[in-house]
Image (cartoon, rainbow, N blue to C red):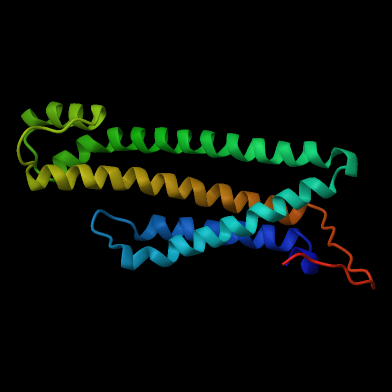
Length: 188
């Protein structure tokens, strides 16, 4: 596709599809959401990610001389890895922060006795569970607070993808590969 359209179109479309999939997660995920209801969003997000990877590398490679192509490729891969780790850490911190900030409100809404709040908050903050069965209202409150964290995270992902799509459309100069009149051999 890059040879026919250049890298700007698939990169921008991939970012827009990623934003749409993340926005879809924001509006559909809750503690009771089945995989059957959202599988297509995972497929869409995966396809979008695939549409972004190759064009971003192509954009970096055509913007430097042939002698510097190895460095450009290495820089793209290094920043992709750094972005993955940093993005995951930031989204995890955002989710945890939102979970902890929303938990008291959700505990109150689900009529969990105030005397139980410190134990629930401690269990959520440390990732430890109590001994025995957790009451359904506590499970529902934690699920709601967690879902709030997931929603804020997917909303941030959607916004970042949308901003990147706009930047891609406005700032990247497209250089489609020129097909010459001579045939080239390809390895199967």
